[in-house]
Each structure stands twice: as C-alpha cells, then as structure tokens.
Length: 211
Image (cartoon, rainbow, N blue to C red):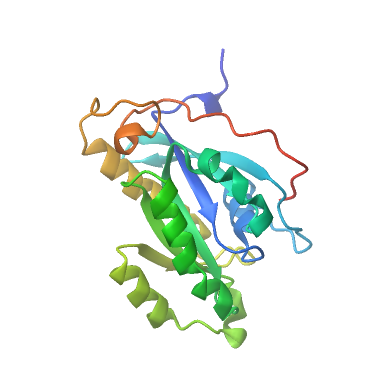
C-alpha cells in the first residue's frame, strides 16, 4: 500500500528561476521541509522536492524544481521547463542587479515554457529591509505590466513563503480545472498543463546538489 504522500488529485511541476544567490534553494527547503540553511551553497545541476497541500478540497502535490542560476548550467533549460505549469521568478530585494535580470529570465521562460504557464514574481529576502534596493511599488508595477502575480518573501524568517507557493498552486489549480481535458494531449504539461493527474518527466540525476 502506498504512503499518503502518493495519494493526490493533481500533480503540478513548478520551477524556481532567477539569479544565483537570490535564495531559491532556501525558499524550496523552507516550503517543503521548513528548513533554512545560512551556509547554503550554490546549487549545482538540478534538485527537486515535493509537498502536498489542499486546494478547494483537492490534494495538490507540488513537484518544485530548483536549478543553478549560473550561466554555465544553461544547457539544462529544455528539460527543466518541460511540463512546468508554474514558475516562481525570484530576485533579491537588496541586490538591484538581480531585479534587472528578471527581464532576461522572463524572456527565457516565455521562450521555453508552455505559453499558459502561471508566473509569480518573488522579491525574496524581505528581512533585509534596511538594505532594500528594489522598491516594492516598482516591482508591483512591473508584475502588473507583464501579467505576473507578485509577492515579497523571506525564507529566513518564513514571511510569505507559504503564501507564495499556496497562491501559485491555487492559481494553477483554478486555471487547470477551468479547462477541458483533452486538447493537444502531449503528455504532462501539454495543452497548457491540462493532462491531470499525470507524473512529470523524471528530473535528470543530481550532480552534487546543496539545498
């Protein structure tokens, strides 16, 4: 008999993207394991973790993928985005350059991911308010202009981490449940992610990953 973790109504693949060092791995570990590692090193290759939540009485299992933000790992792009129905585009509120690079990440997402992917812009490290380099209102306006949802989080003190993942998973659920299953069946994530539930492709083997 399978474990309770194997019992779910929907399985959604969500990817974390953004520059190296913005806190993607700690957002992942805070949401899936309620852990934070101050000594966290850059992720090498790809890692993923899962967690299930309840949305409107249904069990939604999120498979969240995290990859390195460094340029040298760009070759994994196509496999990384395949089947993704949601993306958290993360920047560091205390490092303006990570916000400037959001434009490039968004273009990559539009180029490689499903056109109906749900995207949330995440300003992480909100605990560093005394070092803030990106005004909240500026990021909000950018998100609205590009039809993204927006939230500021802190993986360090847990602020809005639960809300960020819950909100995007709820948005994906509503998007998927409003569509009819069957158009453009191309495996999980095909046709706007309407083939539910079905497992996404297995991630490539990890190459020494750190949370």
